[in-house]
Length: 451
Ligand code: PFF
Image (cartoon, rainbow, N blue to C red; front, top):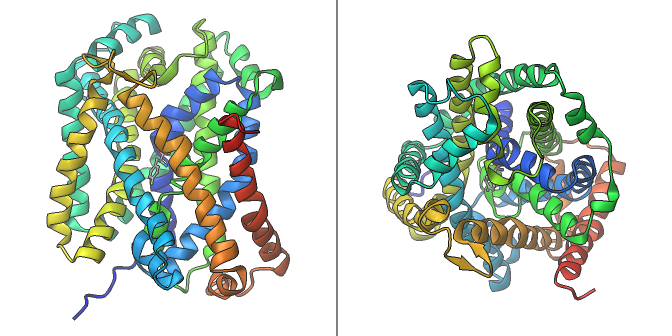
């Protein structure tokens, strides 16, 4: 007998689990440094446009595929395309992308776990400037032992949760941790914007200078929208496959997108005013939050505890994302090869761990090992976020908009959302059929120098 597929306990449970997948290092670690490297407000505006006209419609499409088929990415495309090998390949590309992202994402998640331990040890107490924090970061991240140790520990945490099954653990944890994360970020935003000299940082975030924008910036903004929304590789599809057909899909999708975008913007306001107040340049790269935040806490009463708490929450935010990445792989193996969830979780965590080791060493002994001029870590990130995810996004849009077809998709979309207004379905259908695929394609071609 085939075991019945697990389902989320409630609508809010689904929203928070999917938002848990979306909100993570992408919002707090990556978004601020991309903003810092790509012109501040102008990048933010581009990002918001990408989220609105491409991100949201594709979020709806991806969850819809999963909820309708109730299967993993490959199984879902197989079911809805009647076994068309091309579309099954698209599902497989998603699972493969999950592997790559998890391998380096888990390394940074490991850094944040390592920072919890360092915070408890008091390593940041006497740091007076971000330069000193930067030196400590370099020392830690370039230590192969430290980076690999915490990469391994984080992988064990991720495996543990997937091993036990998802719904109860993630749903419960997300319900408690997400609101706390939000409150903590708000406290830090208030601290940041009230620092002396913070104004320049606020200006940087609201005053757009479009002269710095190139097509590469557009690709980065689009890639970040996909990365941040966990889009284009079947994570939302997989979570959608555990969703009841009674739940209102479009409004849930909107809540996920709003929550994710809000936390990314707040993270910007948490970091940049403080950064300018400390007299630093915005283009700090991936070490940005690890240089600024530890020092920022030294100017807050009770900073010692806040710092521990912050890195703990950052780790939790990362954990609710790593789980969703491993769940994509797990659901694929369990559905397609009938291997038990427990075995799959153990075996594939080990594989992903090994794949992540070169990324973990990219800041230390392997830093001079470059492919196409990029370290292993940067290459994995660039390929996954800027190539595979948008590519997955094009295919999802074409699949729903043209192959499966809006006519077939709409009745499923309206299940649980009977009052979804017609003009909204029309806008969604236009965005998913024309805007999303064409825009992603144009950005790709122009980056490749073809147009
Ligand atoms: N959305 C996550 C973040 O912003 O940190 C990263 C991510 C998770 C990407 C899950 C893709 C995914 F499937």
